[in-house]
Amino acid sequence: MTTVEDLTPRPRPPVEGALLDARGVTKRFAGITALHAVDLSVAPGEFVGLIGPNGAGKTTFFNCLLGILRPEEGTVVFDGRDVTGLPIFKRARLGFGRTFQRLELFAGMSVRDHFIVADRAHRDDGRLWKDLLNRSKPTRDERARADAMVDLLRLGNEADQPAEMLSLGRGRLVELGRALMTRPKLLLLDEPSSGLDVRETAAFSARLAKVQEEHEFAVLLVEHDVDMVQSLVSRLYVLDFGTLIASGPTDDVFNDAAVRKAYLGSSE
Image (tube, rainbow, N blue to C red; front, side, top):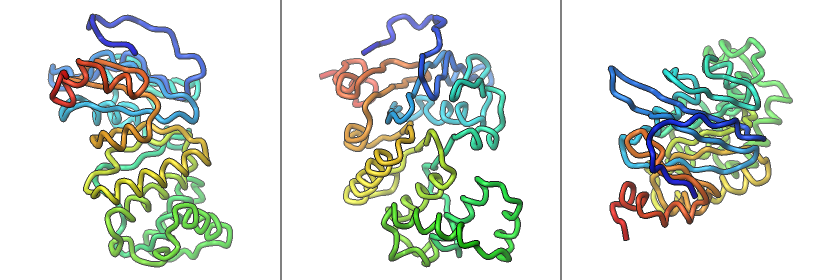
């Protein structure tokens, strides 16, 4: 495990074989540094966590990775390509996927239709505007791909229900499926347990782990639920006040005194 003892940024070489390699990412708002020279890498098929107390800079870092924000310093390299200056939609086409802390589903649209619209957006077949007007019927292939996702996430009983009729836990699975319809190489999950009870969190975690293992996409998880993080991720990064204070194997990081003080409120 590595810990930050000297906050002076040091250039580092690229991480060989990394799918995502963020180097020295620095972001400022009105002169206030929200991120200070943050390094993070994710290998193909790896499950990595990013934690930290509220205000640590996790969402800002996510937004820099996705292209919602542009860092003042540093680079974001994805699959060997520097994407620091690319817009969101181009990053998505390269293989970025994302879910949101606040559930973002469309009222009046069925579970299956959520998957079909995501499939069309990924394939960019020019008919997405018709979906918004409810004028375009799915093709046999589109329905087959959507049904495969329904089966994968075990949503068969809810496939034709409007998304707003689902429990929050099942809605989280719909959001996950919609992201997976874009065939991501890297899935960024922003606090997927938000609003879920213990049972729903456990069910979501189990399904996510199974799907990720079978399909071998990489995951970067931002999450406050310590039990969920420990059950899923193999490596962990910790932010505090915009600075990376620790990184390494999950158990080692959680046992680090600085991490326990910053994140868990205890140095014991």
